[in-house]
Length: 446
Image (cartoon, rainbow, N blue to C red; front, side, top):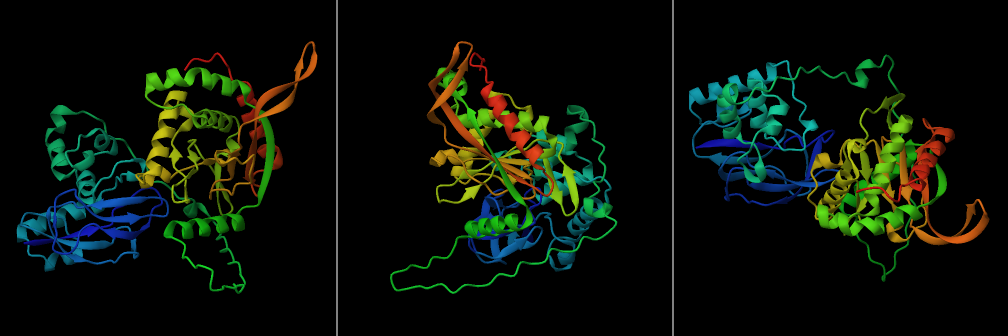
């Protein structure tokens, strides 16, 4: 018998820790390879941690609500012989055969010494630490892993898949290795240290509670939302610009094509992908809005990744991200929006689905609000709120003169960070969004 350490895997860009929310297995339970052992929650989404081996759960190292760092051992699984992955510091304590231990150590050392690193945060797929080590040791690129067919649960690539691939690679595949350059972080380029922000001193105000009141503790996500909202207000100098937009052509066009669109694509055509397409187009015109702030440094983002604020059934909020939104046509945008919204509602978002956003859009009109003053999603510098579309009387200008007519209108509310975005840029950006919306071609093909 041998013991395997189940570790908290890396789950995506900037995810350093997670909270244990539920153990799906208890000590003594039999576990199959790739079977989920526990449920965890990051600051954005919930996820499951699968086992990389088959065996029996013999020890649980963290309780529910404990915070675990990426790479920490969270459970011990006892396997029936064979070579397994173990950490170097515990090799002497294992009961694996001596030659198996030597092979494992050589594999780990080789993976650690390799000068080419693979940035797994660029992928939306889950790769176990064992698969990652083998990939590093054998020089398998992320591009090769992405096209590899996995035989594990949910199509995951397991140990057997990657070993079989390596065995057949020379004859079956010829994908060139991608030369990688070690990234240089901003912190490495700074010549002067930036003083840490002073913590705001808050005064606790006593709360009066009587016998008829009920005291309910915030759930985990609400605590995180509360923390992030307060930090954003304390970090960014929020300022807003508002503009009213005539979207009559968009309403008429959507009413005309939505039936045929759903029949052809199997997807509903809502207003959201239309707005997202226009916002992405405006961000290309004004790249100064597609930035983030790190201390005294501005980071100009190459990709346009749109955050899409979505309300959850429990009343909380989550912001899935549409990656490379400017490269999607309307059909692709609609499919992506619907997929992210559906998976957000049922709690099936992956950690990477909420990472990497460069600008955020929130639809306050869903709840009947005409406009709002949204809080910036740090470290971004802008967020656009879409108000409710309403029929209103409006002055219509024609060559024959002005007259009053009924038009479909809405307000756009743009919050931006005045530390790095001046009123001219913030106002010009939201005006450009309005211009694109009002110029919508009512005869556009889908």
